[in-house]
Length: 402
Image (cartoon, rainbow, N blue to C red):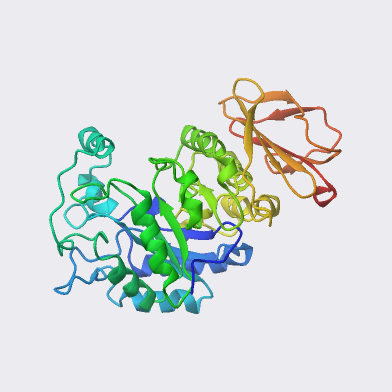
Protein backbone atom coordinates (compact mmCIF):
# COMPACT_ATOMS: atom_id res chain seq x y z
CA UNK A 1 0.00 0.00 0.00
CA UNK A 2 1.90 3.00 1.27
CA UNK A 3 3.53 4.71 4.17
CA UNK A 4 1.17 5.35 7.06
CA UNK A 5 -1.69 7.69 6.26
CA UNK A 6 -2.08 8.67 9.90
CA UNK A 7 -2.06 12.47 10.10
CA UNK A 8 -1.63 13.00 13.86
CA UNK A 9 1.53 12.05 15.80
CA UNK A 10 1.98 8.38 16.67
CA UNK A 11 1.30 7.19 20.22
CA UNK A 12 2.38 4.00 21.92
CA UNK A 13 5.12 2.29 23.94
CA UNK A 14 8.74 1.57 23.05
CA UNK A 15 11.09 -0.77 24.91
CA UNK A 16 14.37 1.18 24.65
CA UNK A 17 14.22 3.82 27.38
CA UNK A 18 13.16 1.26 29.96
CA UNK A 19 15.34 -1.69 28.98
CA UNK A 20 17.81 -0.76 26.23
CA UNK A 21 18.68 -4.14 24.67
CA UNK A 22 19.11 -6.10 27.89
CA UNK A 23 16.04 -7.13 29.84
CA UNK A 24 13.59 -7.53 26.98
CA UNK A 25 11.91 -10.82 26.15
CA UNK A 26 8.50 -11.88 24.90
CA UNK A 27 7.00 -12.03 28.40
CA UNK A 28 8.20 -8.51 29.23
CA UNK A 29 6.89 -7.09 25.96
CA UNK A 30 3.48 -8.71 26.36
CA UNK A 31 3.23 -7.67 30.02
CA UNK A 32 3.75 -4.05 28.98
CA UNK A 33 1.21 -4.48 26.17
CA UNK A 34 -1.27 -5.82 28.72
CA UNK A 35 -0.64 -2.79 30.90
CA UNK A 36 -1.34 -0.42 28.02
CA UNK A 37 -4.81 -1.95 27.93
CA UNK A 38 -5.36 -2.40 31.69
CA UNK A 39 -4.27 1.15 32.62
CA UNK A 40 -6.52 2.76 30.00
CA UNK A 41 -3.53 3.97 27.99
CA UNK A 42 -4.63 2.16 24.83
CA UNK A 43 -8.07 3.76 25.09
CA UNK A 44 -6.33 7.15 25.42
CA UNK A 45 -4.56 6.55 22.10
CA UNK A 46 -1.35 4.70 22.99
CA UNK A 47 -2.06 1.95 20.49
CA UNK A 48 1.38 0.78 19.28
CA UNK A 49 3.96 -1.54 20.89
CA UNK A 50 7.46 -1.11 19.46
CA UNK A 51 10.21 -3.64 20.21
CA UNK A 52 13.40 -1.65 19.79
CA UNK A 53 16.92 -2.98 19.25
CA UNK A 54 17.63 -6.31 20.95
CA UNK A 55 15.02 -8.61 19.44
CA UNK A 56 17.49 -10.20 17.03
CA UNK A 57 19.64 -13.30 17.40
CA UNK A 58 23.35 -12.49 17.46
CA UNK A 59 23.71 -13.39 13.77
CA UNK A 60 21.66 -13.95 10.63
CA UNK A 61 20.98 -17.43 9.31
CA UNK A 62 22.90 -18.97 6.40
CA UNK A 63 20.64 -17.17 3.90
CA UNK A 64 21.27 -13.83 5.59
CA UNK A 65 17.82 -13.68 7.18
CA UNK A 66 17.44 -11.97 10.53
CA UNK A 67 16.33 -14.29 13.32
CA UNK A 68 14.62 -13.76 16.64
CA UNK A 69 16.80 -14.27 19.67
CA UNK A 70 15.97 -17.90 20.57
CA UNK A 71 16.24 -17.38 24.32
CA UNK A 72 14.37 -14.08 24.61
CA UNK A 73 11.78 -14.73 21.93
CA UNK A 74 11.46 -18.53 21.69
CA UNK A 75 7.96 -18.31 20.22
CA UNK A 76 9.20 -16.11 17.36
CA UNK A 77 8.56 -12.54 16.32
CA UNK A 78 5.61 -13.48 14.11
CA UNK A 79 3.90 -15.03 17.12
CA UNK A 80 4.68 -11.95 19.21
CA UNK A 81 3.07 -9.73 16.57
CA UNK A 82 -0.04 -11.94 16.58
CA UNK A 83 -0.29 -11.60 20.36
CA UNK A 84 0.04 -7.82 20.20
CA UNK A 85 -2.58 -7.59 17.44
CA UNK A 86 -4.90 -9.84 19.47
CA UNK A 87 -4.83 -7.19 22.21
CA UNK A 88 -6.08 -4.61 19.72
CA UNK A 89 -2.68 -2.96 19.40
CA UNK A 90 -0.31 -2.23 16.54
CA UNK A 91 3.13 -3.84 16.33
CA UNK A 92 6.47 -2.13 15.67
CA UNK A 93 10.07 -3.29 15.20
CA UNK A 94 13.54 -1.79 14.83
CA UNK A 95 16.00 -1.90 11.94
CA UNK A 96 19.14 0.09 11.08
CA UNK A 97 20.50 1.05 7.63
CA UNK A 98 24.19 0.33 8.28
CA UNK A 99 26.06 -2.88 9.04
CA UNK A 100 25.49 -2.69 12.79
CA UNK A 101 22.63 -1.72 15.04
CA UNK A 102 23.08 0.70 17.91
CA UNK A 103 23.05 -2.14 20.42
CA UNK A 104 25.91 -3.82 18.60
CA UNK A 105 27.98 -0.62 18.61
CA UNK A 106 27.25 0.84 22.04
CA UNK A 107 26.17 -2.17 24.06
CA UNK A 108 28.25 -5.01 22.64
CA UNK A 109 24.96 -6.72 21.89
CA UNK A 110 25.24 -10.49 22.08
CA UNK A 111 28.64 -10.33 23.78
CA UNK A 112 28.22 -8.51 27.08
CA UNK A 113 25.90 -7.65 29.95
CA UNK A 114 24.56 -4.21 30.85
CA UNK A 115 27.39 -3.69 33.33
CA UNK A 116 30.04 -4.35 30.67
CA UNK A 117 28.48 -2.24 27.94
CA UNK A 118 29.99 0.90 26.44
CA UNK A 119 27.33 3.45 27.34
CA UNK A 120 29.48 6.55 26.79
CA UNK A 121 30.23 7.99 23.35
CA UNK A 122 33.44 6.96 21.61
CA UNK A 123 34.88 10.35 20.62
CA UNK A 124 37.23 8.91 17.99
CA UNK A 125 34.45 6.89 16.35
CA UNK A 126 32.11 9.88 16.27
CA UNK A 127 34.86 12.03 14.74
CA UNK A 128 35.32 9.44 11.99
CA UNK A 129 31.59 9.44 11.30
CA UNK A 130 31.40 13.23 11.14
CA UNK A 131 34.44 13.62 8.87
CA UNK A 132 33.63 10.71 6.56
CA UNK A 133 36.90 8.89 7.33
CA UNK A 134 35.46 5.57 8.48
CA UNK A 135 36.81 2.27 7.20
CA UNK A 136 36.06 1.75 3.48
CA UNK A 137 33.24 -0.71 2.75
CA UNK A 138 33.69 -4.32 1.93
CA UNK A 139 32.08 -5.56 -1.27
CA UNK A 140 28.92 -7.63 -1.21
CA UNK A 141 26.08 -7.74 1.29
CA UNK A 142 26.54 -7.50 5.01
CA UNK A 143 28.13 -10.34 6.93
CA UNK A 144 25.87 -12.70 8.88
CA UNK A 145 27.10 -11.18 12.14
CA UNK A 146 25.92 -7.76 10.93
CA UNK A 147 22.38 -7.13 12.10
CA UNK A 148 22.02 -3.86 10.18
CA UNK A 149 20.12 -3.80 6.89
CA UNK A 150 22.89 -2.50 4.61
CA UNK A 151 22.40 -4.13 1.18
CA UNK A 152 19.67 -6.31 2.70
CA UNK A 153 16.98 -3.66 2.98
CA UNK A 154 14.37 -5.44 0.86
CA UNK A 155 15.05 -8.81 2.49
CA UNK A 156 14.66 -7.36 5.98
CA UNK A 157 11.54 -5.36 5.19
CA UNK A 158 9.88 -8.37 3.56
CA UNK A 159 10.60 -10.33 6.73
CA UNK A 160 9.01 -7.68 8.94
CA UNK A 161 6.02 -7.34 6.67
CA UNK A 162 5.49 -11.08 6.83
CA UNK A 163 5.45 -10.80 10.60
CA UNK A 164 2.66 -8.23 10.43
CA UNK A 165 4.70 -5.18 11.43
CA UNK A 166 2.74 -1.90 11.39
CA UNK A 167 5.51 0.48 12.50
CA UNK A 168 9.19 0.65 11.57
CA UNK A 169 11.81 2.51 13.57
CA UNK A 170 14.81 2.92 11.25
CA UNK A 171 17.86 4.05 13.24
CA UNK A 172 20.97 5.53 11.57
CA UNK A 173 23.44 4.61 14.30
CA UNK A 174 26.73 5.26 12.52
CA UNK A 175 25.68 3.66 9.27
CA UNK A 176 28.78 5.30 7.73
CA UNK A 177 30.88 2.67 9.49
CA UNK A 178 32.31 0.18 6.95
CA UNK A 179 29.77 1.16 4.29
CA UNK A 180 29.48 3.70 1.50
CA UNK A 181 26.65 5.53 3.28
CA UNK A 182 27.93 9.07 3.79
CA UNK A 183 24.85 11.00 2.71
CA UNK A 184 22.02 10.24 5.12
CA UNK A 185 18.94 11.04 3.06
CA UNK A 186 19.47 8.28 0.51
CA UNK A 187 19.23 5.20 2.75
CA UNK A 188 16.13 6.54 4.49
CA UNK A 189 14.48 7.40 1.17
CA UNK A 190 15.29 3.93 -0.18
CA UNK A 191 13.52 2.25 2.73
CA UNK A 192 10.53 4.55 2.19
CA UNK A 193 10.35 3.42 -1.44
CA UNK A 194 10.42 -0.21 -0.34
CA UNK A 195 7.68 0.40 2.23
CA UNK A 196 5.55 2.01 -0.46
CA UNK A 197 5.78 -1.22 -2.42
CA UNK A 198 4.51 -3.40 0.42
CA UNK A 199 0.96 -4.71 0.68
CA UNK A 200 0.35 -3.24 4.13
CA UNK A 201 0.49 0.23 5.62
CA UNK A 202 3.56 0.88 7.77
CA UNK A 203 4.24 3.90 9.96
CA UNK A 204 7.79 5.03 9.19
CA UNK A 205 9.82 6.64 11.98
CA UNK A 206 13.43 7.53 11.25
CA UNK A 207 16.14 8.24 13.80
CA UNK A 208 18.94 10.36 12.33
CA UNK A 209 19.63 12.57 15.39
CA UNK A 210 19.59 15.79 13.38
CA UNK A 211 23.08 15.19 11.96
CA UNK A 212 22.19 16.24 8.41
CA UNK A 213 19.15 18.43 9.11
CA UNK A 214 16.40 15.84 8.46
CA UNK A 215 13.73 18.52 9.02
CA UNK A 216 14.73 19.79 5.57
CA UNK A 217 14.13 16.50 3.70
CA UNK A 218 12.61 13.72 5.80
CA UNK A 219 9.10 15.14 5.51
CA UNK A 220 9.10 14.07 1.87
CA UNK A 221 8.71 10.42 2.89
CA UNK A 222 8.85 9.79 6.67
CA UNK A 223 6.09 10.09 9.24
CA UNK A 224 8.55 11.37 11.85
CA UNK A 225 12.24 12.16 12.17
CA UNK A 226 14.43 12.58 15.21
CA UNK A 227 15.76 16.09 15.72
CA UNK A 228 18.48 15.50 18.35
CA UNK A 229 20.68 12.99 20.11
CA UNK A 230 19.01 10.56 22.53
CA UNK A 231 16.99 11.92 25.41
CA UNK A 232 18.21 11.37 28.97
CA UNK A 233 16.18 10.91 32.13
CA UNK A 234 16.84 14.43 33.41
CA UNK A 235 15.24 17.87 33.40
CA UNK A 236 18.17 19.39 31.51
CA UNK A 237 17.83 16.86 28.69
CA UNK A 238 14.06 17.28 28.38
CA UNK A 239 14.24 21.07 28.29
CA UNK A 240 17.18 21.32 25.87
CA UNK A 241 15.70 18.83 23.41
CA UNK A 242 12.42 20.76 23.44
CA UNK A 243 14.26 23.99 22.66
CA UNK A 244 16.22 22.39 19.84
CA UNK A 245 13.11 20.79 18.32
CA UNK A 246 11.07 24.01 18.42
CA UNK A 247 13.70 25.65 16.20
CA UNK A 248 12.39 23.48 13.37
CA UNK A 249 8.69 24.02 13.96
CA UNK A 250 8.03 24.93 10.34
CA UNK A 251 8.85 21.37 9.21
CA UNK A 252 5.90 19.82 11.05
CA UNK A 253 2.66 19.25 9.18
CA UNK A 254 -0.10 16.61 9.21
CA UNK A 255 1.40 13.15 8.75
CA UNK A 256 5.01 14.38 9.05
CA UNK A 257 6.38 15.59 12.39
CA UNK A 258 9.55 16.45 14.26
CA UNK A 259 10.42 13.77 16.82
CA UNK A 260 12.24 14.96 19.97
CA UNK A 261 12.65 11.29 21.01
CA UNK A 262 10.65 8.89 23.12
CA UNK A 263 9.14 9.92 26.43
CA UNK A 264 11.07 9.46 29.66
CA UNK A 265 7.99 10.19 31.76
CA UNK A 266 7.92 7.64 34.56
CA UNK A 267 11.73 7.52 34.70
CA UNK A 268 12.25 11.17 35.67
CA UNK A 269 13.03 12.44 39.19
CA UNK A 270 9.62 14.00 39.93
CA UNK A 271 5.93 13.67 38.99
CA UNK A 272 5.91 17.42 38.24
CA UNK A 273 8.59 16.93 35.60
CA UNK A 274 6.66 13.95 34.20
CA UNK A 275 3.60 16.15 33.67
CA UNK A 276 5.62 18.97 32.13
CA UNK A 277 7.44 16.53 29.83
CA UNK A 278 4.20 15.12 28.40
CA UNK A 279 2.65 18.57 27.98
CA UNK A 280 5.80 19.99 26.39
CA UNK A 281 5.98 17.13 23.86
CA UNK A 282 2.29 17.72 23.12
CA UNK A 283 2.94 21.37 22.37
CA UNK A 284 5.61 20.23 19.90
CA UNK A 285 3.11 17.89 18.18
CA UNK A 286 5.57 15.11 18.92
CA UNK A 287 5.04 11.36 18.81
CA UNK A 288 4.16 10.18 22.32
CA UNK A 289 5.98 6.89 22.80
CA UNK A 290 5.99 5.78 26.43
CA UNK A 291 9.43 4.63 27.58
CA UNK A 292 8.90 3.35 31.12
CA UNK A 293 8.35 -0.18 32.45
CA UNK A 294 4.57 -0.31 32.81
CA UNK A 295 4.70 -3.53 34.84
CA UNK A 296 5.50 -1.48 37.93
CA UNK A 297 2.79 1.14 37.32
CA UNK A 298 -0.56 1.09 39.14
CA UNK A 299 -3.74 2.71 37.90
CA UNK A 300 -3.55 5.41 40.59
CA UNK A 301 0.09 6.33 39.95
CA UNK A 302 0.58 9.98 38.90
CA UNK A 303 2.31 8.88 35.68
CA UNK A 304 -0.96 7.41 34.39
CA UNK A 305 -2.75 10.72 34.93
CA UNK A 306 0.11 12.57 33.20
CA UNK A 307 0.03 10.28 30.17
CA UNK A 308 -3.75 10.38 29.82
CA UNK A 309 -4.24 14.08 30.55
CA UNK A 310 -7.07 15.09 28.22
CA UNK A 311 -5.73 18.61 27.69
CA UNK A 312 -2.24 17.46 26.73
CA UNK A 313 -3.55 14.79 24.38
CA UNK A 314 -6.03 17.14 22.73
CA UNK A 315 -3.14 19.50 21.98
CA UNK A 316 -0.84 16.77 20.71
CA UNK A 317 -3.52 15.16 18.55
CA UNK A 318 -5.03 18.38 17.21
CA UNK A 319 -5.93 17.84 13.56
CA UNK A 320 -3.92 20.85 12.36
CA UNK A 321 -0.66 19.25 13.59
CA UNK A 322 1.54 22.30 14.11
CA UNK A 323 4.67 22.53 16.26
CA UNK A 324 5.02 25.20 18.93
CA UNK A 325 7.63 27.93 18.58
CA UNK A 326 9.68 29.17 21.54
CA UNK A 327 10.04 32.69 22.87
CA UNK A 328 11.76 34.02 25.99
CA UNK A 329 10.09 35.19 29.18
CA UNK A 330 13.17 35.78 31.28
CA UNK A 331 15.92 33.65 32.75
CA UNK A 332 14.78 30.22 33.92
CA UNK A 333 11.48 30.26 32.01
CA UNK A 334 10.91 28.93 28.50
CA UNK A 335 7.73 29.98 26.71
CA UNK A 336 6.21 28.03 23.82
CA UNK A 337 3.35 29.25 21.63
CA UNK A 338 1.14 27.14 19.39
CA UNK A 339 -1.67 28.46 17.20
CA UNK A 340 -4.83 26.47 16.43
CA UNK A 341 -7.73 27.03 14.06
CA UNK A 342 -9.50 28.52 17.05
CA UNK A 343 -7.27 30.21 19.59
CA UNK A 344 -3.78 29.73 20.93
CA UNK A 345 -1.96 27.84 23.65
CA UNK A 346 1.03 29.31 25.47
CA UNK A 347 3.13 27.13 27.76
CA UNK A 348 5.49 28.72 30.29
CA UNK A 349 7.99 26.17 31.64
CA UNK A 350 9.99 26.74 34.82
CA UNK A 351 13.33 25.14 33.98
CA UNK A 352 14.87 26.00 37.37
CA UNK A 353 15.04 24.23 40.72
CA UNK A 354 13.00 26.82 42.65
CA UNK A 355 9.50 28.15 42.03
CA UNK A 356 9.07 31.31 39.98
CA UNK A 357 6.33 33.90 39.69
CA UNK A 358 5.66 35.52 36.31
CA UNK A 359 3.06 37.69 34.64
CA UNK A 360 0.50 35.78 32.62
CA UNK A 361 2.02 35.52 29.14
CA UNK A 362 -0.07 37.14 26.40
CA UNK A 363 -2.19 34.87 24.27
CA UNK A 364 -4.16 35.74 21.15
CA UNK A 365 -7.75 36.54 22.12
CA UNK A 366 -9.54 36.42 25.49
CA UNK A 367 -8.11 33.90 27.95
CA UNK A 368 -10.32 30.82 28.23
CA UNK A 369 -8.28 28.76 30.69
CA UNK A 370 -5.14 28.83 32.82
CA UNK A 371 -3.61 25.69 34.29
CA UNK A 372 -0.55 25.34 36.52
CA UNK A 373 0.93 21.85 36.87
CA UNK A 374 -2.32 20.34 35.62
CA UNK A 375 -4.67 22.32 37.87
CA UNK A 376 -7.06 25.03 36.72
CA UNK A 377 -6.44 28.36 38.47
CA UNK A 378 -9.01 30.63 36.83
CA UNK A 379 -8.89 32.63 33.64
CA UNK A 380 -8.70 35.96 35.48
CA UNK A 381 -5.32 35.35 37.15
CA UNK A 382 -2.67 37.98 36.44
CA UNK A 383 0.38 36.45 38.13
CA UNK A 384 1.37 32.79 38.00
CA UNK A 385 3.56 30.93 40.49
CA UNK A 386 5.07 27.89 38.81
CA UNK A 387 6.80 25.12 40.79
CA UNK A 388 10.28 23.87 39.94
CA UNK A 389 10.16 22.00 36.62
CA UNK A 390 6.47 22.79 36.39
CA UNK A 391 4.50 24.51 33.64
CA UNK A 392 1.65 26.98 33.25
CA UNK A 393 -0.66 26.58 30.27
CA UNK A 394 -2.65 29.59 29.06
CA UNK A 395 -5.25 29.08 26.32
CA UNK A 396 -7.61 31.21 24.30
CA UNK A 397 -10.54 30.08 22.18
CA UNK A 398 -13.97 28.68 22.99
CA UNK A 399 -12.81 25.07 22.65
CA UNK A 400 -10.60 25.48 25.73
CA UNK A 401 -13.16 27.20 27.97
CA UNK A 402 -13.59 25.54 31.37
